[in-house]
Image 1: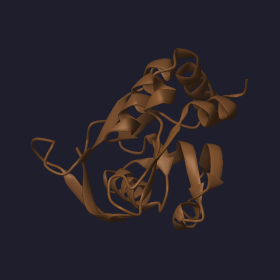
Image 2: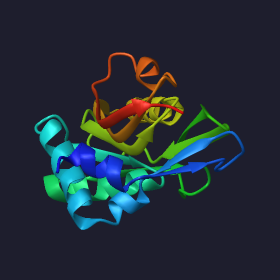
Image 3: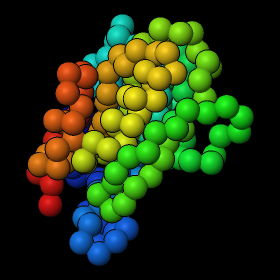
Image 4: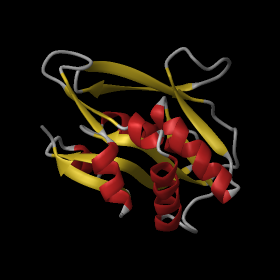
Length: 176
């Protein structure tokens, strides 16, 4: 079975979560399946091979992907956290969600300036969190080496908002 088939078969669709009118795609059952999780990491690592010097994961489910990719590639891991979770000096970026606003933060100076950073997350919807992540990575003095997601919800504008960044989605399906 292909990695995209595994994702589609194992993921759940949860209506009215976290708010009424939102259809949430839950990939935690995919991550709980060792074969599917390994296939996802192998697929993302192969797709971006030679294009990154570090991996950044978006809190929270992006951390799962980023840690495994950083380990597989023997590269540094950069945490992009929700507001108020990092001590000391941080850079902040506020963005819109389907259901509100949020802020991400990053520690500047944790890796070598100019490093190519692969940004990973579980789902790309409106693109708000991914755009905020690209801005933080660049403001910290790094270069966006690419963006990888497990599931892209087409029709919500996420891909368009990311412009010319290299974006790879294991699965793309219509939002809804």
